[in-house]
Image 1 (cartoon, rainbow, N blue to C red):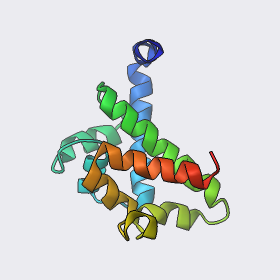
Image 2 (image 1 turned 135 degrees about the vertical axis):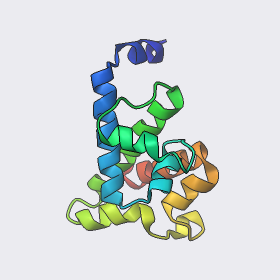
Image 3 (image 1 turned 30 degrees about the vertical axis):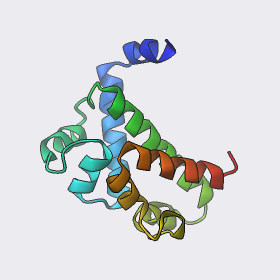
Length: 131
């Protein structure tokens, strides 16, 4: 029930701020536009939505997209906390092969497994932080 109430209180301005934050995060991670779209649950060729989000237009209203953005921002938070003295590593980590993911990059895990892959990466980092 609280999820429904939370979604009702999110304004268009808040959704625009979320859009800008996640696009900035993708820039830090140096992801291709195709990877950016896939991580947001969009069609790989949907550059139009990414351009609109970059300009601050509100991110979609679907629960899936909100949850994806929330997990992506949590991944970023985990990485910044794990690599406090190495910002470059925190930003490179998503594109670095990892033995824990059968030598795939975290981005490849998300592309291959979709939302479940996003959760795998998030929970891996949560455990690494001792959560």
